[in-house]
Length: 390
Image (cartoon, rainbow, N blue to C red; front, side, top):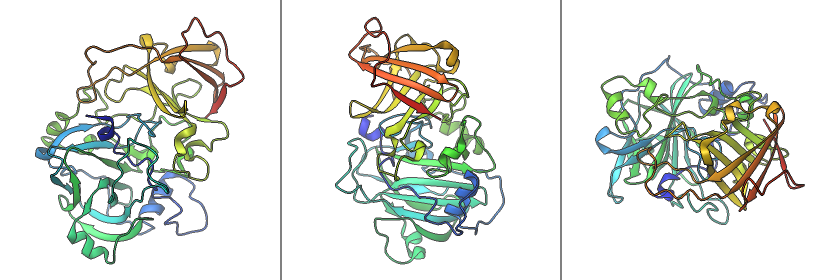
């Protein structure tokens, strides 16, 4: 799969912002409240927990599934959704299904950024739809990058959909009902959110209150699917170790592992909700398909986002703390096949440069990257070093 297919993601699109559907002037006090207010606007129905009776694509239509946790392009921090890929040919449209009973509560035809799409790995589509489905007062799913909305849904929405902000609706749907279409050979996003569950691997989940408040509550969809469907789906997933749906939360308090945000960059949400909000992001984590491989993901290096593996795959960032002083990483390309999760044949381990990291405090990090340098050439930080926090 090429980089463009892998990165059919919602990076440069307008997110369904918490402020869009807020029904009170008081800001939400938790990410769970923010999700409920944003998507269901105090009208949620039903009772949980839920079980998925199908997947967004029929098993026979799926080429492969990539789990959560990929870091690529503007997904500097681990991404919070599965990628589903319909089989070839690319000219064929595949049905996208509701995974269980619920109500479509938001639809967004997301416009391209002013002046065009700045990220060459993101599809520049005329129609790019995101659909939110409420299943219970604590459970939602979203389907992203649809190229067509089903006519049955469209008739109940009423009016014409246009590029712009999300449209609030309440359209009942049944498990397995067709919601729209995606094109074969291209990735589209699927996530399941359960606010009865909160991930433990975010040191400060309140980072997500201003953007993507569902992230601390994103769950592994495979845990919500019964056999025999679960086994059929896992056979299409190149990740072969638990959690099979991937992981997105690697923060360890007082350790290097996890998400960091450059001082003055606005934290996870960025400043002014800019299109490229991720430029201040930094993550020390592990490959979404081969979780033994360290990945360092940088929001801005030499004018663009970069993701690296580490020569020698050490030291483990989950073990590095303030007492360890300055650590050096030789940066190389990740050696993982995106379809199989196994090492690539004929891999060229070219060193891009050296990264210096020093946790000066449990939640403060000093960092600098030296391009085209070796560890013997790099002795200490310079005046261009940057500080990160969490």
